[in-house]
Image 1 (cartoon, rainbow, N blue to C red):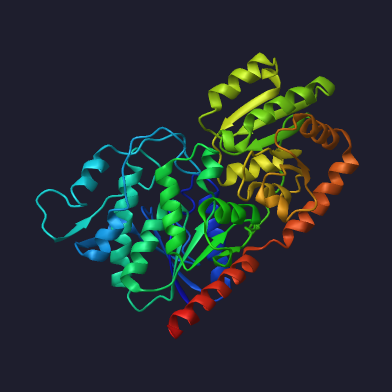
Image 2: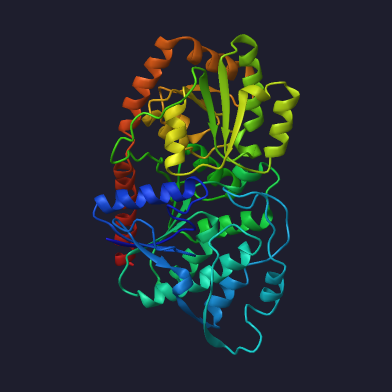
Length: 436
């Protein structure tokens, strides 16, 4: 079984959980005998390719040919200037104004005829020219599918940034398409969705032969808010990867308990609820320090709120952490809190639990579906959140129980098992494609 997979990021160059999930899934697929060719907009050469072959889209010379099929796809792409959260792992960005002219010209660059070859230099980031890169990525995806014709069985696209790429590859190859929904526009923006992003998500899922969602919570959104038939949507929960070696203890240098929030400091992740709960805990027990690890558009708001509450001497902001820095932060933590307002899944609690850290998670998260040994609270109930934190930092026996049981529980949540479910989806679609 061979899979042509499209993603936007791959470790070690990641901005959040999407890259981590992509890496875990490809490793799991390799262990299930699935060969994966993973295409990213920009590869840096230091990616782990033991389990996957990485294709750098920036190195692909793409042939653009006008025609009914390609024109129908490109006309769906629109370029607007907006100021909202476009992607799961970025601050508010704007679409490139130049893109509008690009589309109005029919997707052709000045001076070109009906066909030409061009190599696009992708940034691989979530910048101001994001939508133009999404468009160019789809052109390159079509070329990759042409070049590899007959060498892959299924196409797999991760999140809306790559859905047009997956659609283009399917149009060229005729192979079945799987789209993976890691986070919907409703998760990022609540009810104030960006219509362009929503339309891309819906178009990708309608064109797909199967939609994989990371939780039943996300599956319900896909069915009810996008109108995708239930029989087409399958839940495959994310997992956690255990490191090959134990890094050992990390020196703390203080006796205070440490309670950690790790994630983007945006509305979706609920950082303001974490701050309010922290203030309530500190009124009851003083020897606790709260750490907010991450960055995002709510940073200044959160810093001001911490100052107004008079808890600045107990609150620490680390900025964005990745890789070994995340592992060290978990090693220093006594409690991990994920108070997300809307969380399609949430891999970070699993990473905390594998580090023997007891966790508190919001009931509004997909990961709550698979965990028994996590304290679960409504994100808005800061009193319950504060009580849970207080209990874990005050009663050692309770913390030890959740730490031990939590570690045992996540040991069974392996990417190999999740990938086996994905492989079965591939096999079903490949058989159907053969029959057709």
